[in-house]
Length: 306
Ligand SMILES: NC(=O)C1=CN([C@@H]2O[C@H](COP(=O)(O)OP(=O)(O)OC[C@H]3O[C@@H](n4cnc5c(N)ncnc54)[C@H](OP(=O)(O)O)[C@@H]3O)[C@@H](O)[C@H]2O)C=CC1
Ligand SMILES: CC(=O)N[C@@H](CCC(=O)OP(=O)(O)O)C(=O)O
Image 1 (tube, rainbow, N blue to C red):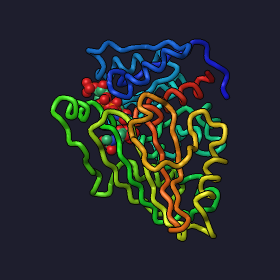
Image 2: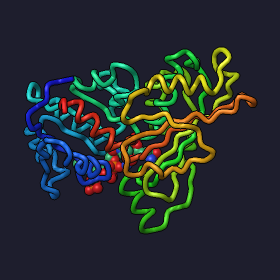
Image 3: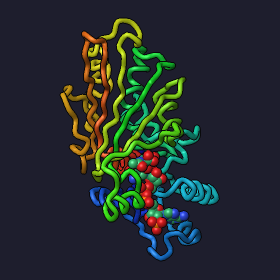
Image 4: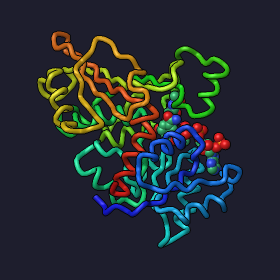
């Protein structure tokens, strides 16, 4: 862990957006100084650059293109460059950025603590990678396993535009999307879960504000060796033993997506039937909590040694 910076200064670029607001609220629990931009100048590059120049850490809560622009601005500052934590998809598979999923694998939290650039994970990848990577690292699942990932998110996952659509114009009760099979989270899941074969990913959104379930059906006969559902459970338990944020919970007959709304934790489960040699892995989280702002707070604490 790095030595704590005395009252570090943090600038959230995109502070008024969904993720930015969630981070701002959570920062009140930390001994840091929040630098806020004049709302009228929030998209003015010179005003943003001036805020960045005063900050120890800049948290980017922007669309991808604006994040790339902000990272380029930071690079122009040379030795006075602030450290960056990016909430967008822009740098999640970039080799010179550290992936900000502290529990993903042993040693990841230490990498985050010292990195100049950290990318906050996507909401869906947080659940998918948490379930898949321990199985691949334990050799239970082959890297080229034919993985299918189904997921449902609350509408806040679509940012301000989708929130307004659902809250003011009555969005659909349930909608499958990403059916072109090009969702922006697939490369991130493939890389960080350590898959060598592109997974199928079918996301959906429901008419509820916050919450998410990611589920991965498995035929146990397609895994390595003679694997039972209990072996999958043991593998996940070993990986997340003692984690305050990721827990491995008992299987349940049904799961409600909204249960963890407002919380920054994630629950993993293995729902197995050894007679039929089948299992469904699930991750339940709040897309705005462990899926976004809660993970960002975890990364901020690690980066500042708090
Ligand atoms: N919502 C979610 O569940 C998650 C979102 N994310 C990621 O976080 C990022 C932000 O998403 P989210 O908070 O949902 O989006 P929002 O649309 O709610 O917020 C984006 C914010 O960025 C501002 N903004 C847009 N362009 C610029 C610019 N060029 N310069 C400065 N500010 C700008 C917007 O201002 P204005 O509204 O005035 O245009 C708005 O305040 C995205 O990259 C998203 O992928 C990550 C994890 C989960
Ligand atoms: C419901 C919905 O639209 N969800 C968004 C994902 C949420 C999000 O913005 O994801 P990031 O974590 O990558 O930023 C989507 O599918 O694009």
